[in-house]
Length: 328
Ligand code: NAX
Image (cartoon, rainbow, N blue to C red):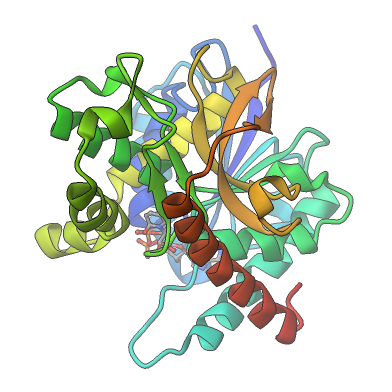
């Protein structure tokens, strides 16, 4: 069998961490042939809670779990890491301006980027889940100049999965009948779920829906504001579905996307579709042999263009703000 893969999870004692760690230990992150060694990073006050989760992980007697180590120092936590899941972040609290939020997260993602640069394995893959995910990924990437930029990604897979599920529901089909859906832009309320290039049982999805009012007034806002809907209903933010999406993101990146389909990932732009180079923006991507490529040549109609531009414009503003703060 293979040597264990080192997986670092930050914010391990949080609610997404709790849902995520057991699925990693059971082999769902990388596959059933791949043993994993978990490296958990928390802030000092939450180390004890992470230790509690580690006790439960031990009690799972997971055949693929080769070990668990817990740290409060990023330098140690990212030593030798092959897969880094950056979940822990500073949430927006009452009265906090966007600049304050970006600055507080800079204080987390800058040292983590540096630690990844210094100690991670050569093949490291990074997924940022903690919000604002795209810009946090941009900050981490900026402080890891020795790591290829494309290894820094941000999670829009939850948005992607939400959009697939809502579209399947509208059309009365199975989620497996939907292909080639795309989330463009920022993981925020400006994100754009695109069904014009999607297919349902081989037919164009926008034609199958044939209802622009539903698209504009129900589907897009529902997907974009689903996080708020979950908070309203559950009294807490999305956790198991977010963990599920993180599993999907990394699994597909490592093991490849199915033939004839693609997924959405926040990745550094190469200038495709007019998105400024270097911004971490969500694109349609195809994964193969452990790497990904942005799907090229899609037709972008005027409606899609204006939605993509609005979300990318927000990413530009976030980048300008963190540039001013000296964080990138
Ligand atoms: P929790 O508040 O339950 O957990 C966060 C954990 O991170 C805490 O245990 C905290 O101690 C830890 N932490 C804080 N700073 C840290 C640091 N410097 N190093 C290591 N650990 C640190 O939040 P949870 O519900 O688990 O959500 C985590 C993040 O995911 C939030 O930023 C949230 O906004 C974001 N989300 C992103 C989603 C996406 O689609 N990209 C969807 C779900 C979620 O909202």
